[in-house]
Length: 332
Ligand code: 5GP
Ligand code: MN
Image 1 (cartoon, rainbow, N blue to C red):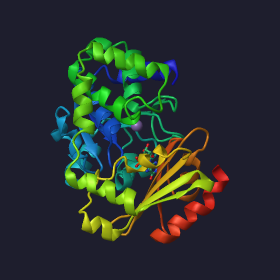
Image 2 (cartoon, rainbow, N blue to C red):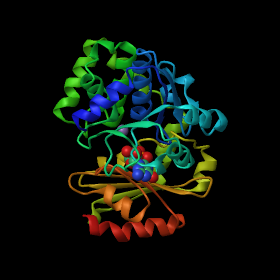
Image 3 (tube, rainbow, N blue to C red):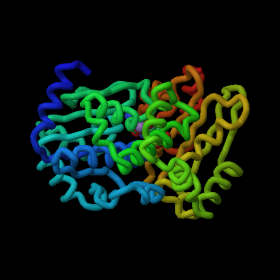
């Protein structure tokens, strides 16, 4: 980001705007936290802000302030499209490619309004006017905090904004275990100084499982996990029947992929699922220099971060697993 760009966005924000805030499909804590934080922040300038989520948010985030106001495209297409059409400015948060917002992508592109992108994924697409894009940031929430600082507006932060931002720090770093940097701890300290109750946040986010969710985890680990010591890798898969039997819905499988990396010596983890729709989705995790982002970009129409990426496959479940095992050695 250049200084002129910062001046430009400051000028844009100096008069009231109708702003639509967008984030990626299957929004996580960072996506939702950054969206709400930006909304609350911009409202303090007198802007009118709407958040559009391409799909429903996980129930664990019910505690987040005013989350019910978000428009969910999958549930109310008309309202979501209206928010996009009527916007005279957009904020794109925690995604950097229009394919991450699915069929909303073309509508966002069609509206020629000024677009600001704040994100920490690799390889941003050139569809926005303002970029605060930094892959060394732990989370988009860390960058939103930085953005507010760059505008010289930290005095506008309040407890709701701080709580939303802290949520993104926690969820994108697995409670400060990975993707950290010195700055994220400074930001966390600042937010805690503002009164963030990090204990309760952790309790809300991590101790809110249902019995059924634990059973899905148990089933995944006991019956659906294969370890390949020669590849330092493990795979967990779930098939359509599993989805039916355990009534698995979005969010129920969050975090399962990470268990593989708890096995000593594991460097790559894949969680491959055959959704009830028949779509095959992958979640990949790695340690150190192994880039699952490159792997999913090259072979599974996906991307993300070096050590955490996702994608999809046009093959069936069995062939997808075979393909993964075949291409993996090229990335080790
Ligand atoms: P998860 O496995 O938790 O769904 O995603 C891990 C990371 O990869 C997230 O940062 C997410 O944004 C990114 N990601 C997941 N699916 C896709 C995808 O289909 N395309 C791209 N470009 N990134 C993805
Ligand atoms: Mn993020």
